[in-house]
Image: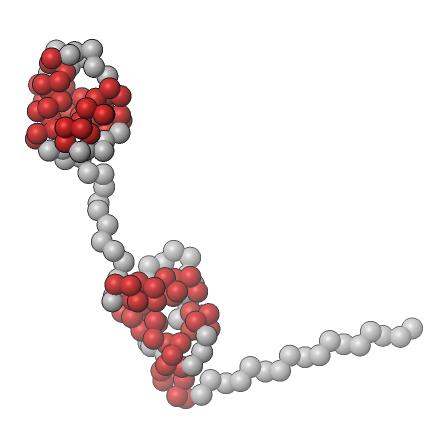
Length: 154
């Protein structure tokens, strides 16, 4: 019986030159794939790596142990905003309503106690330009109940 030819052995990867090794930034803290946060200093160094080493973005991302998408996203932010930093995010939902809207809701409900949150949405939009959902208006109802007592709001 004849044996099948053995598959060719892949060549050994070329060792990285000293110049390329020197161009790679040092890793100072844990970061990288699978949910670990990338520091801004790492992102700032990573966005210039493809041009500095003359390698594709995917290769530079692999060298930095980050996803290609994260590197492309950082490059996009740098191009659009001039910084690789993420946009600031709020800590949670905005629960502050202007005093004029709260006062107006109180007056409307006092004048017409049978108004529903769905009916108040277009009224508040025409009066204040506020694009509140019916759920948000019902939250305002709840806030008004806590502030003035449940007898005034049903």
